[in-house]
Image 1 (cartoon, rainbow, N blue to C red):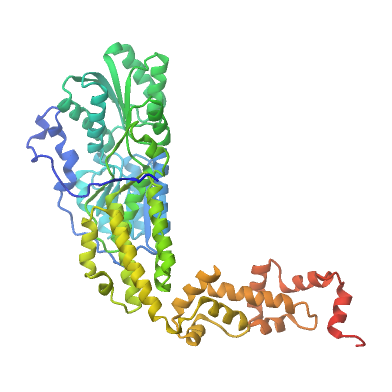
Image 2: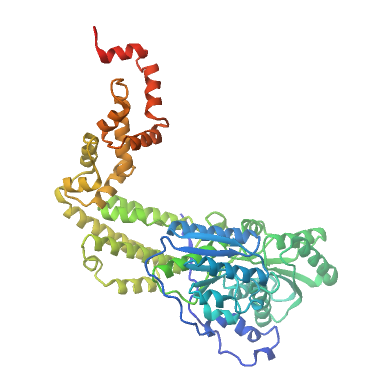
Length: 582
C-alpha cells in the first residue's frame, strides 16, 4: 500500500527578507508592497491570553461561525464536528453573513453565550477592526481561522489557523510559469473581493510571476464573487479582447469559477488556454486527471476545519499553541493526482480509548492490533502534516504515562527519560514510523509488567462464569473487585472486552433471560420473579424487561401462556405446575 504524502506545515514565524520601509512606494507587482499583509502575524505583540484549564477538551463548549454558503464551508464544518465529536467537545455552529454588521452581531452573541472558546471565520477583515476586543474583554479565547483578520485584531487572538495562501499562490505561480514556458499573456480570477484570499491569490501569483517570469504579462484580473455566470462572462470578454495573446488563466476557485472558465473556453473553442487553480475538490482532481486543468493547490476544507478544532483541543490540554498554524503547502498535478483521488482527503480519525483499555488489561494482542490499525488509518489518507503526526504521538505518550501512573508503575523505567524530554524528542523527530514503533515497544513492555503482576492470574472466563452463576445476587463491580482482589476499573474493562457489553448491561441480560423462564410459572407473581432474579425494585425490573424484550412482563407471560413452545395451550401448561390429581 502506498504511503501517505507527509508534508511539514509551517507554524514557525519566518521572514524571507527584512521588513522594507515605505512599502506603499513599491509597485503592486513587487512583493515588498505586500510584506505586511503577508507577514503581519509575526509582527504583532499579543495581549495576555486567557489561561488554559489544562484539563482536556471533554465537556468544553466551543462556538464557530460559518459566514457563507459554499462546499468548502460544508467541508470545514465537517472537519470541526469530526474533531469535536472525538474529543467530547460541545460544538455550536452559527451561520452568519458576510457583512460587517453580521460579524458584529455574532460577536455580541458569543459574549452572551460565554463559551469556553470561540473559532471565528472573519471575511473582509479590514472592514471590521476591533471586532475581537469585546470577545477578548469577556475572557473568551479566540482562534481565528481560514480568513485573515485586520492587523488591529491580531493582538486579541490566541492563534490563527488555515491555508498559507501567499505561499500556495507562489507555488502555484511557479507551476503555471513552467506550463506557460515562462512567457505569454495571462489573466486571473480572484476570490471574494475584500477577503484575505482575494489579496493573496491575486498578488501572490502576480508578484511571483513578475520575479521568476518577467516575459509573462498579466493582461487583467478581477473578482467574479465566486459566481459561475460572472466567471464565464469575464473569460468571454478576455477572449474577445485579447484573442491569441491570452495564453493562460489562473483561478482562485476550482469549482464554480473554473466551470465558468471551461464553459467560455468551450464556447469559443479555446481549449489551448492553460488553466491552473486554487482548491482541490473531487471535480478539480478529475479535471487534472483528464488534462483540462494542469494544477491546483491542495486545500481541504475538512483539514482546515480539523486544524482549527485540533488547535482548540491542544489548548484545552495545556499544550503551547503557536500564533499561526498553517495548513501544508502543496500543488497537485498529473504526477500525483491519483494519490489524492484514491485516498481520503482528510486527517485520520484516531481513537485513543481502545489503546488505554488494552494497556490497562495488559492485552499485548490488543496493543499490536491497535498500532496495526493506526498505521492503516494513516495509509488510507492522502496527506498528513508532520505536526499532526507529532500530535498523535504526544497524545499516545500522554495516555501511556497516565495509565502507568494509575498502576503505580514508573514510566521512566520503561521509557528511560522524563516525559518533558520525550515530548521534545517527539516534536523534533522526523521519522514518524519509528516513533510509532517505539511507542508500540514500550506499550508491549508495559503489558508484560501488568501480566506479571496480575494477582492469581484470574481469567476473563472465570469472572464471566461467576457472574452467570450468581446473577441473582447483589452484584456490582465493587463486590467483584473484593471477590477477585482486582480493581473495579480493571474488571469493568476485562468484562467488556470479553462479553462485548459493559457489566451492568450484561448482568441485566442474564437476569431477564432467567426471568423469562420463571414467568412461565403462573403461580409466581411478577414482583416475586423480579426478586428471584436479583431485582429488589419491581418497577425497575419492569423497565429493564421492556427495554430488553420490547414488552412488559405481563404481556410476555400472556403471549407464552397462550401458546407454549411445546405446542401446549394455556390450560395444559397450567396443569403442569399443579401436577396430576390436584
